Length: 158
Image 1 (tube, rainbow, N blue to C red):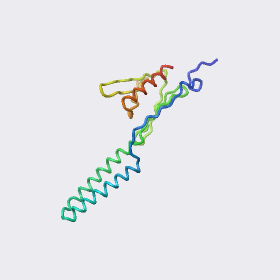
Image 2: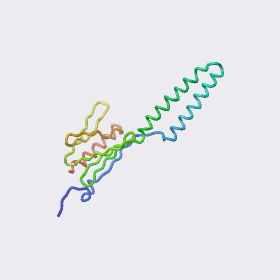
Image 3: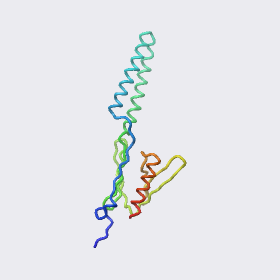
Image 4: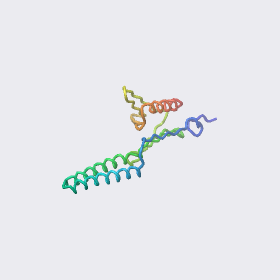
């Protein structure tokens, strides 16, 4: 009889969590908002320009450029997420950040969960063989506690 520790033989040890950012506006909604703001800003600037205050136009352009840059920077991180999986005796964390994908693999038997709490924040990390990876960065404190409890429960079975 084989008493191995892989997830296929112990389905209760297999799990998968996906941690995503809370994105309150879609990319289309963002473009619509930017277009609306541009029409309003340039409309007001044109009205002032008609009355002789033409210097308002360049400032409206700079304002829209700054707003478009801010939307672009926020949009780059809108799809950021972490996927934490344990399957076949391997803990895998896939991090998608600003369009880049990185995968980290850990042996659950050699992995510790690090929980550091401060008065208003909480840091959650996986530590194994001299490497430490922060996880749950997109979650609020309460959900980090829940993730920590679930991971601790899953890791103690190894």
